[in-house]
Amino acid sequence: METVVGWWIVDVNFPVVHGCFEIVCILYFDFDRIVGNIWENQVENDMKGLNKVLASILIGIFGYTGFEKLIRFKDSRRAFHNQTFPAELAELLSYSIPVVELLIALLLLFSGTRWWGYLGSILLLAVFITYVGLIWVGAFPRVPCNCAGILESLGWAEHFFLNLICIGIGVWGLRLEARNEKFNVSTPLNTRI
Image (cartoon, rainbow, N blue to C red; front, side, top):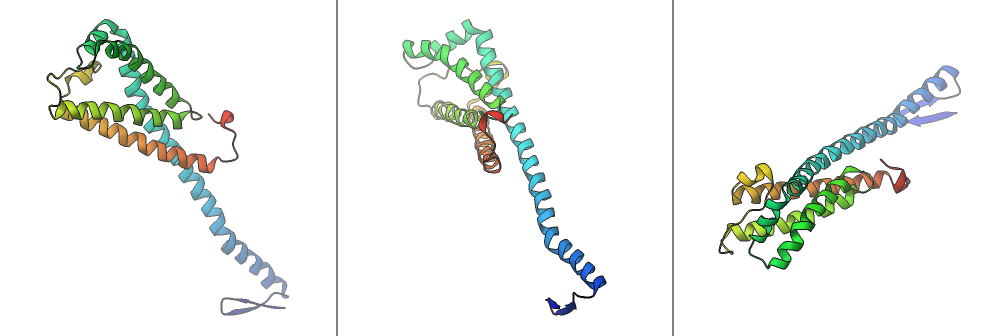
């Protein structure tokens, strides 16, 4: 029996040629699949690692600011009441913003809820960046700041760009999380950690 491989004609009835032909076919045809699987697994692991790094950055930021606002609650509440919106809204925000920041940090901590954490961080940061942008362009008569800790020392331009970078991290993480979901279609949500 003769087999055409490329432009070669190989007599596969001859035992040595038959054995070599099988090895070459296995190496040629399976090499791409084997290397592809190794590469895909490596890329998948790298993306999961990058996803954890991005989530850790946002966990650090939201955890820090949320705890700082709770630890210095009187100062934080006073700063919310110093904002340009009504006192009732300031009172509601003084309680809800730190809780939402800590909830986002908690959602980002676990892989099963990380997608929701990224989405929540993007939405909250979009609200923050809108408010900072309005202050930066002079839309409000006074320029109060209710940031926590070291973030209080930043100017409005720095706040704006820091929030913009954090939104970029959130979007990047959301995309990686969606990509990881593509690889884990058969894995139940409650078993992934």
